[in-house]
Amino acid sequence: MNKPILLSTPHIGNYELDFVKEAFETNWIAPVGPHVDAFEQEFCQITGAAYAAAVSSGTAALHLALRLVGVEAGDEVFCSTLTFTATANPIVYQGAKPIFIDSDRISWNMNPDLLREALEQRDRLGKLPKAVIVVHLYGQSADIDPILAACNQYDIPLIEDAAESLGATYKGRSPGTFGRIGIYSFNGNKIITTSGGGMLVSPEPELAAKARFLATQARDRAPHYQHSEIGYNYRLSNVLAGIGRGQLLALNERVAARRHNFEMYASTLGKLPGLEFMPEANYGRSTRWLTCLTINSEAFGANREQVRLALATQQIESRPVWKPLHLQPVFSECEYFGGAVAEDLFAHGLCLPSGSNLTSEELARVIDGITTVHYGTHKNQNHLLLL
Image (tube, rainbow, N blue to C red; front, side, top):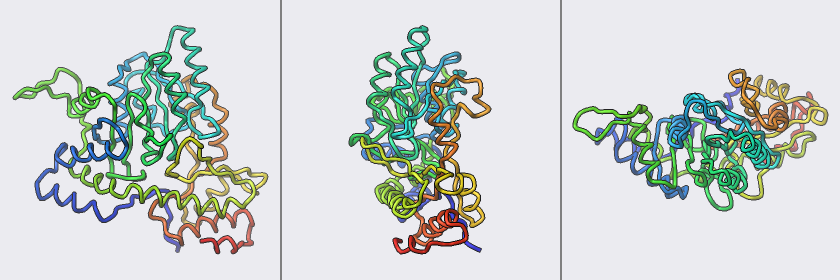
């Protein structure tokens, strides 16, 4: 039986173990420690962020971000609809209400024109949102300039969810470093991983410092345990930060490997009718965290779900693109602007195995599996020559 090919698995290299050993040898096992401090500093050097706070997950970073910009019960927060539920869940943690914004076709990210229209409408109603969360989806930056301009016009803080886009660029800069706060994820399926972890960044030192304070149970400066605010157990451990330091050293290699995966898929499957890959916007460089495509069933001969199930029979994992949050049962009563683009991408979009540790043989199996669906029982071998 074929070995399973998963969507995006952790890729551990040669550097991580040395940092972890150091944590054990010095007994820095608990949260905080020298690796945490160094990880924050090195992360800033790589991304260009001014200040950073390492935390236990990207979701924790988003929750802290919303609290730091003052989101409270009853507030509204505008949010990309084509994303994982973890983007919007922290809005609800704060007792606030998400309002969802549709995608554009150029980047699959938040549509800047729809955002501006939504803000204009809310301004007329005298009910502007307390914050805007923009997601940089599948390794590609949203079109930040017009999004940030719209937020600045109404003095609304922009929070960037760059969980999927570490290593990408927007006009030469890292997404996540433009708004008031940016967040990243180091979950096991991301470009780099600490098994579980996240990072909050900001150009404002007081916000990063407050994030660290809240993430360590909001303990006041006192010889005894004193707390004047509600805090959280969100700080990253020194051991996991050591893994992150090792992973950062290989970031460029991981991005190059995922872009190579995309190039192999595009050069082979791109010849088949009915398949269209997620475009790369001309304002930046995508990491191709996941290679995503849409399937026109009439031209290709099978729909998205038929392709996914056919791959599954060969032990190849693929997944539909994110189900828009405005279609999720838990957010069914939330308002949204647009919706047609995200809904169409969900109906026809598929994510292919994209890990930076995929072998050429595994890529060939995925390509052959999809090609076989198109040609039926006849397998076209010519595409394998390109691998």
